[in-house]
Length: 247
Image (cartoon, rainbow, N blue to C red):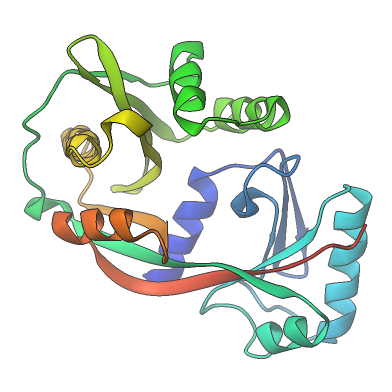
């Protein structure tokens, strides 16, 4: 089940190009997010020399003018993390994967939401304004990535009166919804809008036949972790990245 959640997350957050190398997924998206620009060693196929496989990955990321980044989950070869550390890779972004059974989710109290099944310029503008400094390159990569998904997706914006206060997206696969890019505008944080946004996404997901939800959150993001625990999400496994500049 847990490895299937990892697959759902990979499918929900697409890339611009994916290469399959001996059971490893090498993802490329012009550097926008580690999630879409990293090696995901979720299938250990041949048992080839681990160092040689890492070198091959490095060559491909160097060609793409990107840092070499590996996502370390419970599903990678047992010695991969230590081998990367010995090769000078730095640990980054320790994170947690959490899951929720939707029959326990409350109904939202604030329901002034706008939802679209496809990416819109209005949603992108709102998301970008909440992030204060998303580069043009990252914006372009995000638009390409999210515009090409074939999964059922809802792009949500929560309003207080006529002002957008929070936005995010839900992606459904096999009766499971993943939450991504949940963000509240800086001036409206700590007022419950993030919680209400999520409850609206979960209600939409339930109406579309889903039974579970998952999300990924950086461990040092204390406010987000408190919110997700309040909503009833529980940890199922953790992961982190190993990164090295190879240019």
